[in-house]
Image (cartoon, rainbow, N blue to C red; front, side):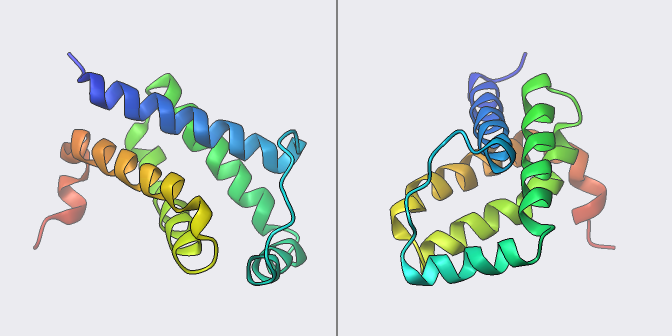
Length: 126
């Protein structure tokens, strides 16, 4: 039987990534004007033309994988760099979003622990 912590972490992170990933395409959550340092980073992301849609697509795919409870380990692998960047972005540029970043880091950390057997071959010292 799955742990309630695993189910909760999987569902919460899945919904968060699904909603915020979809928002990158549909813009249904209004975003306030960011401070200058954050604005410079976002302008760089937007200037690339592909980065924000790619991040949104990865968030949607990972969110769906978590919600439907299929290929959760794959979802963790593809979303891990985004979670790390969310935490670092908010740690250095926008501390108001750091609590959400830390929550995502902890939640995905728990998911890694609950699915660690799927990563044994990758992390084994040989």
